[in-house]
Image 1 (tube, rainbow, N blue to C red):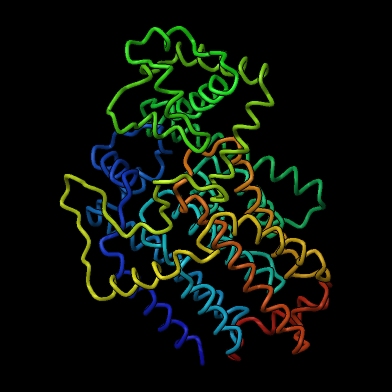
Image 2 (cartoon, rainbow, N blue to C red; image 1 turned 45 degrees about the vertical axis):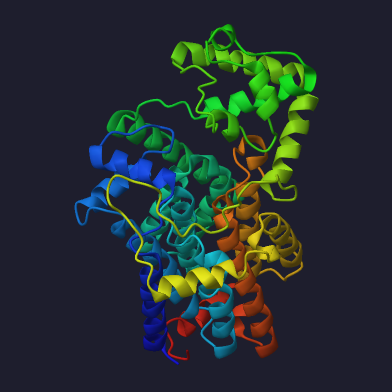
Length: 462
């Protein structure tokens, strides 16, 4: 087995996914962002950076195909780099094929053109590049440093509420490009994050200029409704209660801690809440803060109960959990799936795993905790550093969703946890295998190791 064989397998995997997903699975959010890209008019309901990137790809080929190629390129480039770095022996390569290329929880969203998939896949390739340099005990080359920074940053900007999960990745990046002590690294990390914030604000406010859609409105309304249902006290501001469509009895009847979507986008086609503008937003936020200050226990109780639904530890009857989305949402552009034999095989394969524990969100909270505890027992070295970074990133991405989750029916929210934890599992298999072989990559980090591993890097024993 050599690099050419690995490349052929990676290209083959890319083509299989391309045929299975062509022209790309499109969620309702995907159609919305494609429309924004076509008209070069954006809203901030979704971070506009993805729609702006889609607009650029439309100059090459108008449609979802460019985005599908982008996502699959991220996935299979990561596969190739893992296979030719630490999974270059047959037993480890088989593990990689089973746990990465063939896993239903990796393949289920690789072809869905949505911000969650793009964030996770960009972060995946960035981490693989960084871990490759750590494995060979060297600093990143300039092109690697630039590429990984752009991948982490783009992934963060397409789903900005995932910034906590990016913190561990940015720290890993800083450590990989800078040799200063801990305090200097943290200082550089703060500068990087400040630069990221300013870049995002500049790009969003001055270049893309998205119209305000107030995505926080739904989250705040969910909290106010929950407090009213539990305590009987209303904190709704007067501009809402005076709105002709507002119906507090309807809200009490439909309310669930799991989501506000069944009221916001209700099946009765009723507009319960009035539009929001900047002045009414300030009033709403002030009343929301008052409600939280006076009812912290009720707020946390509602959030905890809803989080159990979010993790699928509690399940609402008569709801569909989208662990896979092999569809194209109704659209005016004529996009439709080509349901050939590869599509049928892939769909049947993933659907056959529907009831397995790894197709449930709670599994991807439990597993990184267990992996972190196991990784902490490893001796100081490459694999311990990499494993801690992946576990911390996964947990920091997931746990803050306690405060901001908005729906309990979407597995795509957990895609980064699936990818990072799978990569961590492959690293653990590799560590134990190399330990049995007394491989030099398990030596504790010291100056002598760098010379040994530089000789190893680029060798043909694969």
